[in-house]
Length: 294
Image (tube, rainbow, N blue to C red; front, side, top):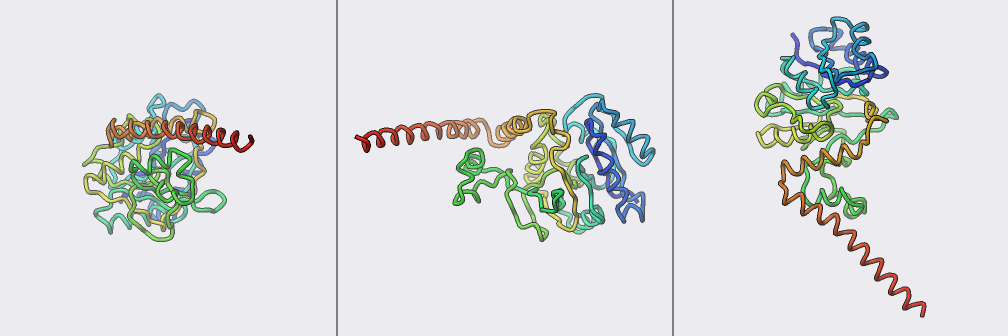
């Protein structure tokens, strides 16, 4: 019986997508039951032959949803959601690959945890280190610290967590606020209740917004380390656009949507105001230095 739809959003990912797809078909649970997982490629108008490559290499084992243009990650996922019907959806980046048992473990956990609407896998970098993939919802102070150099000061760093995905303990299952979308399971019932991704988030923060909406509706987000994946990070983004600018744009939309313009503009004012503080400190240091040299 089909349990999970594995959704891979593709945008000119011909050089790496086979690694992601091969890892799905190599899973023990998929080999034992090919119907356990259904693989869907949501293609955002790739021009590098990705669609043709996938169709030739995998044939009927993979469903291709052709979007015709680069609609962004959120919209591409939504097209795949609409074209599928399994109880769970598993988002897998084209620059990521699953380790054996990844889908079995995450489905088993969600089966046993009815309140769980979203589940993140434990993600590794290619050097074997654990990738920071979990985070907390923003507070005003956390957003200020994370958006300024002050958040890197040792006494303040733990308060700057937010969606900046600071380090957690990654060895035991735990309930969290959010997990990144590189290897992420979502319960279909959650999508049906709160709606799909907000397509105003072209790229980045769409999973944060979704987790926030899910939490408000009473759904839990969990981290399940028994489900493991390896993730390159920014594979499709590299050289294609300014990543930090995209993140800032999405972060601004998220803040305004969930906290309001007063919250956002007071935060912006504080971030700008810190430069006035820096200037004052520098001016005072110059005056003091001149006096000492007299």
